[in-house]
Length: 303
Image 1: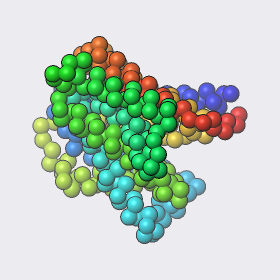
Image 2 (image 1 turned 90 degrees about the horizontal axis):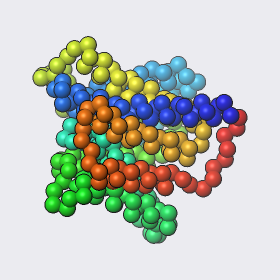
Image 3 (image 1 turned 135 degrees about the vertical axis):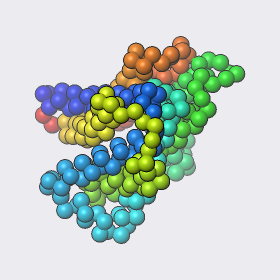
Image 4 (image 1 turned 60 degrees about the vertical axis):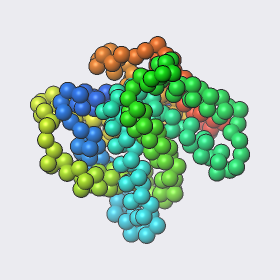
């Protein structure tokens, strides 16, 4: 039982770190002049390199470079890094910059719904009753979130909505595409290299070493470190390691704390206004995630 509570605490802590990182990023964009390109590049390269460093001291350290010796895995890894990892990170931060962390995180959490729709299309079968209910909650939630109950205008910018929906597509892609890689290689190795590949590719385009207009101080440096270390590396490690103690369903349900933290931090820390209907829409999206996270009973984790 102690191990299960330990697993719960790890998921909740990781989710809070993830959720707060979006709000910290919003503060960097609005108050310190940082850009999504710079922050995503630094986040991916540094967090990815540290993951690979940790993997190099693990039992499967040979996989760190061994993955590049397999032709099929090498191609899949590059695609995952460029389209999946870079895609979801950049679109998420771009949505935050154009809107706010609360809306961006909630829109990104439509990803499980997209996975359900894709699987239904792939199998040429209609979604189950539970999945159809999730679709209904998601559609209503999204409409309320982006309109705040007014059908004549959006409550956040069109760009923020588009980037947020694209981040949901990217997250759904990441839930489906790397399955073949994960069957053959350690998760830390796959994610570490995907981050490095995506971050390096963005660096060639964005050139963070030439970035200007950013206000560096002890506070902004600490915020960047938080986003990279706690909001990425530590959060990922806690979530992955927690699966030794809790089931994936339990972890998925508990991870709903991420958008909750993002919303609360945006409202109470950054003073982002949240309309009544926007709040109802956010709740609907969280209900969607909860419905889709509850699957058939899984084997219990041994104490």
